[in-house]
Image (tube, rainbow, N blue to C red; front, side):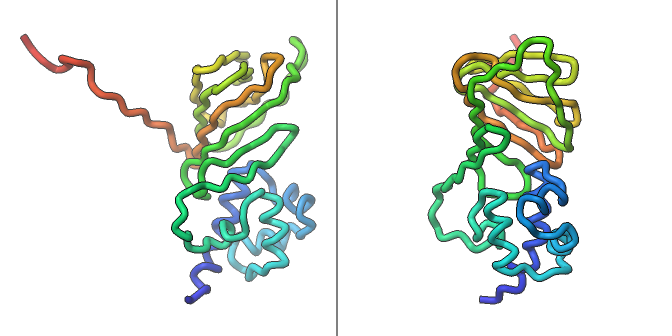
Amino acid sequence: MDFEPVLTAVGPRLRTLRQSRDLTLSRLAETTGISVSTLSRLESGQRKPTLELLLPLARAYGVPLDELVGAPPTGDPRIHARPFTRHGRTFIPLTRNLGGMHAYKMVIPPGRVPDGVPVEQGTHEGHEWLYVLSGQLRLHLGEHDLELKAGEAAEFDTRTPHAFGNAGDQPVEFLSLFGAQGERMHVRARPAEGGGRTG
């Protein structure tokens, strides 16, 4: 097997993965111990990836090493999700692909921010769709402060300042579909009975 095409694809894959995690090169350098210049050269394809570099990156991203290098699938269709924790919140990846749409199950433990306390909101390129499975999700979206219950959904442009929180005294679990390039969720529905008929 020729591994050269596999290795040349590592750089763009690393960049896409970092951007999907909303990480800067500086932050990733602090986490992995790899210099910013080396990370930049890896992503641009100017530095050949080695196990010494890829192993800490795989740990930082919470993904298997074969996902970083784009190893061919083994034929097993199951997704072996490896949860990771950030800022006390648990993320469970539900998709394997590093480009296009990303799906996560997220769990935020109890710990509501008191009313009147400012919440730090972030922005980034993309579009996000949420669906609450259980508990109550607090969605800060620009000037809006919304509470979503189980069965409720929201969709928004992530260039709008936003932040998530727990609005109840139980853990909140929700699905997040995120398109880094602005891909939107499309829902298909059957036309209503009799739609388009004329008398």
